[in-house]
Length: 355
Image 1 (cartoon, helix red, strand yellow):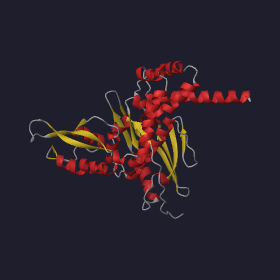
Image 2 (spheres, rainbow, N blue to C red):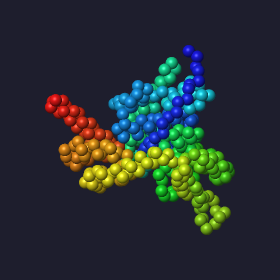
Image 3 (cartoon, rainbow, N blue to C red):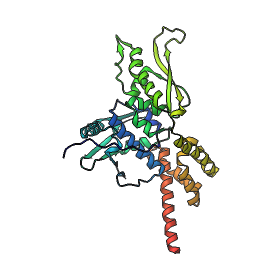
Image 4 (cartoon, rainbow, N blue to C red):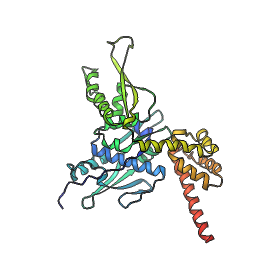
């Protein structure tokens, strides 16, 4: 079969959420197609957390014991007819070889992004097997999460721009990064942008910070400004040791329909039993932002579960495993969803008996 260019199919915009852990994980520069495949995986994880069911035969998800298998059409990642089949092959091969790294004060985690991948030329379908550890990272909101527009992210041409867009989305306070922390986060080798043992700040600005800022300034609802941090703050000639990054919200680039839905979700939390939301905040580690994506699920839980607080207490008791590990809030949401789905099935069975 001749390998023809694939048609461009526009994607519907939506807000997706991913974990704070993922947005701060160390990343190495990805190709634009690798980046889009990862964003689509995030989209599947976000939909799964929200309980959104796939309604067509082109998109599939299978939660296995060790992997999550995802199937999607190539048109989900191709928006340029100049790209060919071999571009997809290269992207999948690169992702298969790539490692995901995350480190904090408690642990170091490293695993592959995908375990296996298949691309069928005739049907134009891509199948990837995502390691459960990556899936859990994307779904673990115990340290917080980031919400951002999918289409804005898909359009960004570099992974550095994507990382900045994700981390700035919804960010309200400035934060500081040393030069070493910035390089580590972006996957830049420690010796790059250095000369004679000294950091070349002008090169780091010219080749990283300014291009990324320009990309976000021109298209995204969230961008940033920055200031240099010096070893001696009172001496303008003192060596630069880091940067303070200040988030900037650009309302003109925000999808207004998505913003309306987001604000409605926030208001809707007020219609959920205060006992439920208070328990989840005080005992389970949630806050208003981490509750709002799941308001429909919680409203169902209040309606269908005869003792919703008792169910939450039971779930909270099951969070701590024998190993001592406490499962994150993503696990809690899945546990609540399981109880709601069970209640829905029981309700349907009861209705049939009454007919």
